[in-house]
Length: 361
Ligand code: SAH
Ligand code: SF4
Image (cartoon, rainbow, N blue to C red; front, top):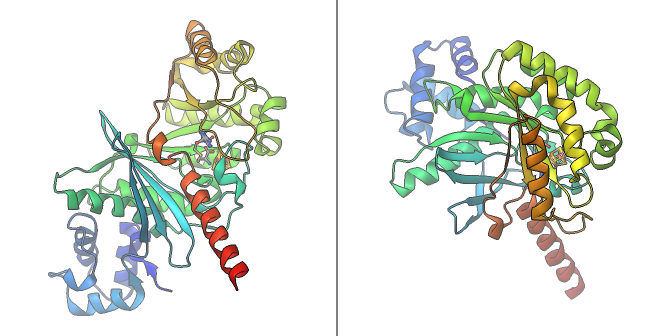
């Protein structure tokens, strides 16, 4: 299978072409056709010479994803289900905010981290996405916007779809470099957020990349006992290690970090946990922001959404202790917009269909 050219950074494409005897400036021309004119076929790249186009056609494709489902919610959120070339399906979500259009991308087919509250964790990781497949999610959403003719552009990206981005680190970094490139989509680093469940060694590496991209840590519990219960990754990288990695990140980048905290009824939503969280963050409160996330119930999972009152108390406790926080507004709840939900429903449907067919035979 040919790989998508979207997977190459501009530097990689330049080197690739130069190694094959083409002029350096050809890479910029190709890049312009891909990301600014957004053509879907090499033959449309009018100012590129034939030998260069032949080389590209022999080695790459442009588009590899197929749109299976596109669901639009009342609030303008659009959820895309894409089929990969090997038949696996992934989801991508477009959300509208007053500050711009944000796309939530998937980085893996399934996830091996297996957090107890997450729909993506039920289905184990099948494989990592290539950098091309991650970039293509953004391109497909952008092409959808282009077709609407309103000259809208994807302005923000959150790497919060299915998968653990730091478990697919190299492809993640290439993806970030492609979408951030000023000669292409030019999506500002400060408008991009990568969320991790807390793979400590990769948090150090990320801090050392020298890119201004935001980091979010899915913390979800303020002590190891509780965190290990709901996120088994905490047994490998407990809170002390994560806090050390965060300190390193803050020292290196001086960028604010977001802590995501899903509120699970009677599990992690007591005032006591809010106090513990405030203690944990007290020495870095000037660079911390806690995003309180209302839980999106997932079939077969034992958790429930916290009561409004518990959410308010939790919020107020953090604020009283000087920790900046907010409650995440929800998008597309009428269309299964929680991480991995549409995909797992689709897979269930497919299984049921196959079973029926077997029975009928
Ligand atoms: N693997 C990464 C990024 C993908 S998950 C991570 O865990 O950070 C993105 C966010 O969605 C995480 O904070 C995750 O905990 C949260 N999430 C997962 N399932 C959810 C659910 N059912 N309701 C609300 N948030 C959920
Ligand atoms: Fe994986 Fe993130 Fe879901 Fe945990 S919350 S299972 S790390 S996608």
